[in-house]
Length: 98
Image 1 (tube, helix red, strand yellow):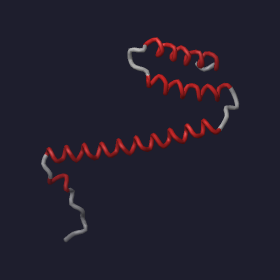
Image 2: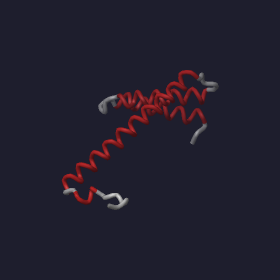
Image 3: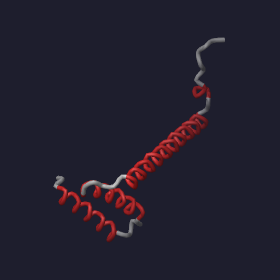
Image 4: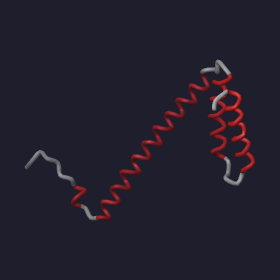
């Protein structure tokens, strides 16, 4: 007996290797989604508890909310998507960003 671990993936058939790779990828995606939701929740809690101290800070909160709103719009709703895009352009123009 040795202390060297055996790579079991090398002893599996191609179908089993693909299935294992898919399970590992899915587990990684699920972990990333869970971590993203936790970070989003933390961000939203900070946005709710800390009042904006300037117009640019308020615009950051507005951008976040508008992005959430735009993500929920159906693809066919081009009018509202264009309105959100125009508002983002206004934010850039009024804030002096280029």
